[in-house]
Image 1 (cartoon, rainbow, N blue to C red):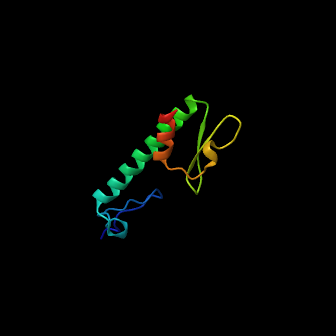
Image 2 (cartoon, rainbow, N blue to C red; image 1 turned 90 degrees about the vertical axis):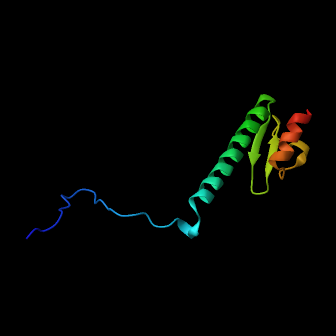
Image 3 (cartoon, helix red, strand yellow; image 1 turned 180 degrees about the horizontal axis):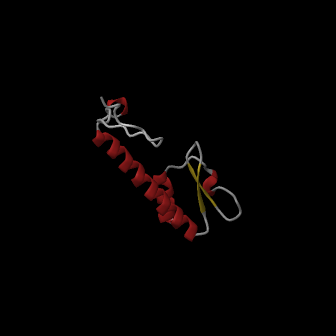
Length: 93
């Protein structure tokens, strides 16, 4: 009679199918959310580079985004701008 597979003291290997995705979301929904997050991150990075080329800094807070100039003051005295507003401001000047 055999004792079955031995662990040999290493990492255990589990064989079997993966469980359903968390919260019952389909894999397509998970990827779509990841793609949207990636697009937003790339857009934010592009706007940071454009602001940096003008000597400005793009900052994010709980309220939104702000452009900071070299004197450390906020542009238009706002810290609640959206990425659309930041992009419009950078295109304007």
